[in-house]
Length: 240
Image 1 (cartoon, rainbow, N blue to C red):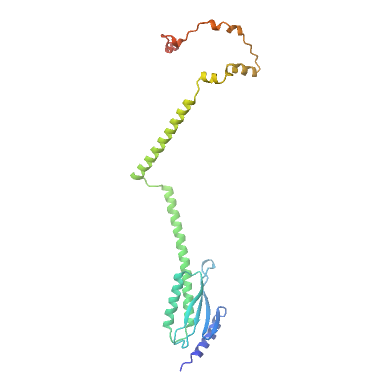
Image 2 (cartoon, rainbow, N blue to C red):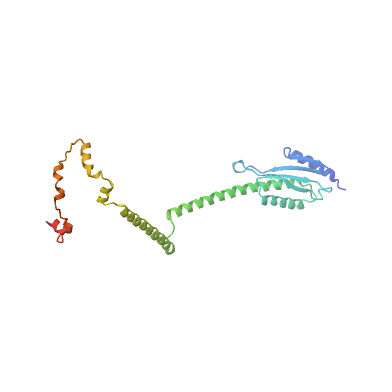
């Protein structure tokens, strides 16, 4: 007759010796304990970790132990699922023998594989980013390939912008023409213009005297406006 209690007690002593820093007994009836498993250090001293909880059934090792993951670090959901499936497989294969060390060792190897996968995945992500950066640089250097469709779209947009610029310019010129004053209008608006030249000379230090007698009889003069003369032609004046 198999003494299950003796086998379980011997295995507990062995496990405590093998995992002194990560083995913890939670209860004796039923016998329940945890073992924390950590992967080997990966890149940048990065690792993954999980804490496994085991409970002996009455007839263990002829019955599989109960097991579960009570905590984990840096593991994704699919990694946790993979570890549970691995424990189930190993427990079935080792039924009838004390198996906790075998189960923990299998999980240890799995965690090391996960660290390697993380390293490989990050390297691939880095390479992908580099390829994307190179492709973006090529696009910036070569520009967008010209097709009939995008050329026509650009042409239509360019013509519309050019037309709008011309319209604004014409509107500005039209507005400027309306606001431009003639010499007569400027004189009527500012009566100081008739003395501005004299004032300028005086400010420059030149004394200007006006002989008013020269203008006394100007009202009696009959001045003809050349423009009223039907034979007036400014072209002939220039030719003379």
